[in-house]
Image: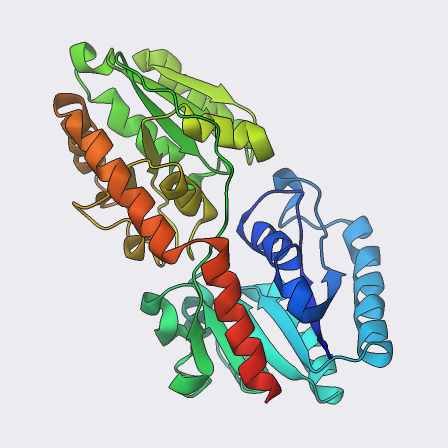
Length: 364
């Protein structure tokens, strides 16, 4: 007989890590093994409204908690999977789910989809520390996205309760189109300072024109603000950079961008978890250049399927870009290693199996 599990979390739109993860989990083969009941916690329809107060969001919260309470009361469930935020008011919203689930004696799994939680916790004091430590300790298990992130829960839970489950997905990519001319670089992310697209543009400004002409750069994503967009567009205009901006893409359009690229660059300067764009680029057999944030360096192995650069050093990024221009054989060899590592570690089957194992362990 199938056991019931409540899956709390956002789904797209907007398209960003936690929402993509929830969508994959809810549509996965876990449905064949368990009864999955979803509580949609979306408060935003776009990136531009995230983190901003509105009365519409305020009125939406009671509806979300009411739906959750109905699931606890009327659905036969034993486990609640709760993706938790990493700071401030968003954590208090998630604490309500933890408190209610514990009141109904459910087994709680905390799913951390980033790497900033402990930084926030250590920077706060008094009530916040006391309250959140108590909430986290109510969990039967916690999930982090990489081995490097286990430490985050060491203040709250014993090691055996912390489980590493990296992001994983399956992708039907269109046939790859090789290019014998320019190296096609793809930068795909939500376009905000923390994601580092301006760092990428700054690195391009120092590449000699003769080499720059061999690059074609496509930047895809939703802008966080008009002011940041103007700043990035000015960099492109002032230095005549070979960069084209396009709006956010999803589904087949996104996969087409990946298939028509030769190199993937994603250089966040703020803490990350295990970004989905990294998994997608590896599935597309692309070499990668990224920064050492969160669990990225567990996917981008420096010198194997790409390079890890310092997010404060545009010269280092510039040198790696020029290395690909000067030795194009690296694109193919590192691309093959990306796909090999993807198949070994980051498919949907791998992620789902680890979730299934954890669920079954808690149900016994």
